[in-house]
Length: 129
Image 1: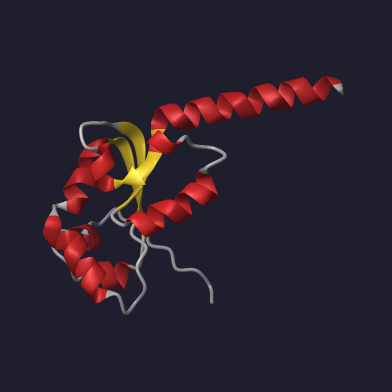
Image 2: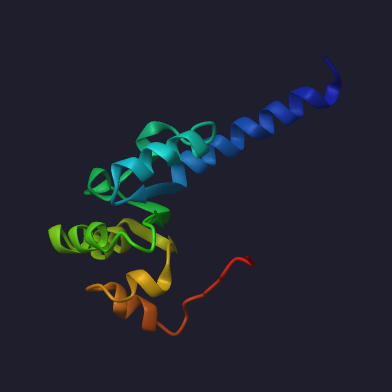
């Protein structure tokens, strides 16, 4: 064991603790949550990653809302926005920041998301293809 190893382990443990105190990663879809669990599972506990509905009554400094539908999955988006006011629940869980990851063009056609799409402080990013 090298002297720096203990410090790196302490840093990693502290980072994980802070993430688990301040971040929720949520999605309206269980399949997306399952995939997210595989990606963030080493950093976030299962209680910090779930469907939007599992966070009701809880808050976090940062909420990352992963919408996760393909271009042709209009029915899934319709169901997600019809069942519950999805965006309102996500927004009210976030104390400081809401990060929304999804297809802006596809989701902005749906209730509540059209308002978000028009919000002037939104930062839009499109990956290079």
